[in-house]
Image (cartoon, rainbow, N blue to C red; front, side, top):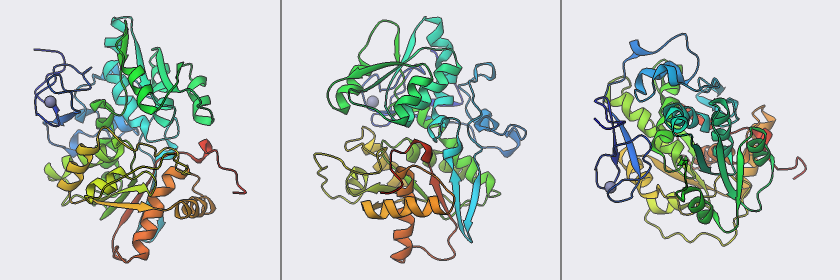
Length: 376
Ligand SMILES: [Zn+2]
């Protein structure tokens, strides 16, 4: 049996359906399209480790990680706080590196670090944002070398954080796709584990759905709002809720609302069958939402249609107002996270939400990383 092929899960191509033989694969070996991990065991509440207050309370549902291989910084089991009567915030900003990405990194690094070490190799990732930060931290925890490829002119708190974790930084001239290309270029001892394409990263985000359901006593919300850029949060969340629904743990899948900015809204346009021409320069305060042409766009569209999800876009002033309102009520998140709250407010104003609807807004990242000035 090839490495990574088990009875309880399968890694399959999202387009041609062919299986991928190794946990290291991040593209279909036949057609090059994105891979998805499909779990073949039901969710069973009796398998939860009730005394583990991290994503690893759900370790049973991640059968590709052996217990002795777990690399953790205590990620997950973040608070679900009541904001007002039916509105809850999921505080993903409180994860160890300050964003939801830690759910993906813990899974990815736990699954692969021994294979990489055995080959005396290092891992590569392309991101100067929260994902680069998170991968750098988990690689550090696993005593693994990480090389993070970033655009040449990058700066700011997230870039500093990547360097503090001790990652090796490769600055690449050119646009975002040139950076991705450089990170993926095969080199001796290099293992590319880019968060956008790697199915195990997305798979770790399933835990977010499990937590939201469990923290609401298995009566999940009617609507969940998430910001969407590359799609890992949206796809992982959808997969988690689908798994709970198919296992008859929850009665229905919440309406997932994929929230974007007017400037960067490829999913919004694709979902509504509208043409999308991104601006030549993106000047949004939501600086974590910059994927104008995300590699997972078709997969996101297909999966969101399957569960009858929704899309929403918000203007810059709506994002800034939402960011300020959150901060002034005690929730200090990055402006990109405020996009989801802004979209919720807009839909409320437009009468798209019933007052009875139970709503969860996922606050994805910490405000401590923002470059905004208070006077703005
Ligand atoms: Zn394929």
